[in-house]
View 1 (cartoon, rainbow, N blue to C red):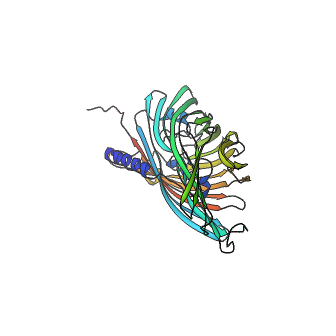
View 2: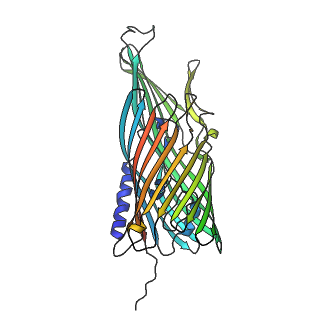
View 3: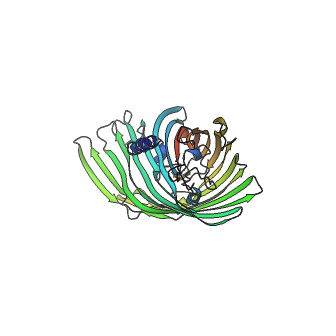
Length: 439
């Protein structure tokens, strides 16, 4: 089993280095790109339900308070990848695109009684798009305007990643009641490059190119808490909450403008560094999970990201002077509602089929982007999946998590996007800390 474990670590770390772009969405050109789903393979099958989730056989890095319930004799290792197919629709135009991406590599173990530790690496956001539009020029100042066309080409790559170390502590544990707190300390790093090239079929007209870029790095702190209460013999309710502070991303956003004379190939370049910094918004959330007889688990999450408080750099020209400055009112607060659950007939039984976990969930996310002053796309998602036990002569606690996910990204009079995703996660649950007795 250990050979399989180390092979999986090497495989997923390799994918993490190679798979830099997890999206082809044109919406990823705005802000910091498409935000990654901060949940493991099991929770992806429940549309990301996580804030009140508390199980000793899974690493729930969305709420660090959950680390305190990790089994004392095991080491948990979880790794996941995704295969994604996207369909874009605008009027009568349609386009398909495919991606594969590294999702996460995480581990957890119990450091002491009522204290759990977790660590890992995962994406925070992704930028990846390439498209163009072309049309006839309607401008009497251009020669041969009847045959002149313009083409705007848009392309961008990059994103943010994070590595974290977390701790969960259970300071209160009474009969039927427990309370836990936790924290994740993360280091974020990454870069992005976004380009817009405006060119013309008439060689008398100059080509104007604008490139936006930035490399950022920062530390981030996420806090979590969970209160678990037993009701009767078969019912347990866990209420969870999380909070993250607004965090500055250290880096200097830069805009480079290149004007090229196509007659003599001479270029004029202007570089502007924005006076200000990127920020990650303050966020908070709350949720609960009801566990009935260790068979049914149903829960709900509500999360808020205060993007309305975040400024973003914008290029502008005023009185023939070029500016690249941070402006307010570029985003709206993002809200996400998640409903999900799991069923397992007999998770402690000997029957393999009885230990299969059936999962499903739905979610709704309000827009946080503003595109040309208009409200950006909202997201509706649905997912389902299975947790399949991995059994052999050495281990019967590990799990293969497989799920299918659909997300509809839609905004009025803008591009409609449908994303279909297959998520595969391996949860290795190894008995590393057991004391063996010889008879």
